Image (cartoon, chains in turn cyan, brown):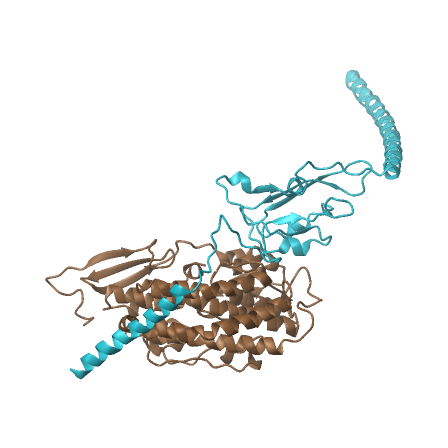
Length: 203
Length: 373
């Protein structure tokens, strides 16, 4: 009987201790944040989707379209599109497509980039109902006002044009030589074929 | 009692499906339970609802590209899994790790362990019908997540370790923040004990319920708090030391009661021990590089069979790989603790009340994506 009362008493006591803590917390200030009205400041290392870094000197990105990020990506969510523009050294980035639906934010692309062209952004308000909204063109995101034309170096352009002309000339010469050789060969074949047909006629 | 169950002529048994989507199973685990009234005759766990072929994925990509998978096995203590993979490939390829990197690894892993146990604590009590402890646990857990976010960049699926070190260095803000957290968290643990452990309802639900003997643990290969709650002192950090763990002074909590309460207490004590490890690591952390300088871009381990085990929050996580000398693994094997811990559920839950079985399952601390690798 005494055990029963002890059990009852201990039980009620344990509940009272719990209630004391709850009451104490009841009087403290809430620490929650009302999200749409207030938002959390992200730490600098927060991993949002990747973005191109703007170089202050050139006021554009530093990407040379080498494609190392694309190669290092485990889920294949990056595709770098580039083209050759006359008068510009190297390749020019035309589109940097990131399919954020498959990105796992591992950071291999950022590590693989030897030119320091990409980093993680702090963007996290990305809610959407459509899948297409998560296929980002990072180049357009860097230049929302419109992608600037690449700067053409006149000297390089001149050099390139000269080179191109020289190459065209060389190609033309080569073509001419090839045509001549082909014509000669054809003639020789005709001759021999003619000889054969003649031989057939004879028999 | 259990021998009589289901054999009564008057009462028929019936099948009860719990899951695959059920709030008490914490993920897509299905339990096919044969019931005799309120008592369980046989409980058969059905797995495979989120199987993602992680092992196969490890075999068809380069070593570096397997990193994101390690954050998605056990999403609650992902850094420990990062540690397992880093250790495995470093052992295979013979990569030296700077000491500072090892300290950073230990600090983040232990913070992650506390975070995992806090979430388990909240969710476990939630299973038993107590809602508010979850809020208390999440209050502290947020602090850890903020700390880890400031250094790793993510809050849950970490991909922080790299071969030969870590992704980025920790700063003074992180060290002061962690110290402040330890100071803040220490007095919280007695508060949890007052609020939850001493509570008469919790005692009724946990004490002498869910008996798992050490023989049963051996039979099914259970590790972690389940094994330590059965009186076996086994912790990879002590028994097979890796990283810089031998340099720290910490205890392995062991309880011999073998019931749900013992497993609960092991985890509560483990949080205190993790705090001790972090404190010592913060004091001792040396200066130096946080990643080894000479790590080859394309890793090609020598032909052979390699193995590495770590103590994750739920038990021993071990990885084994067979390398054929190329830049991909020939065979990747992940041995996850929860799979073995769940395996004993069928035997241990025989003859249990259904409500007790769910409490017992909570005390095993299951993370479903980890079993369904």
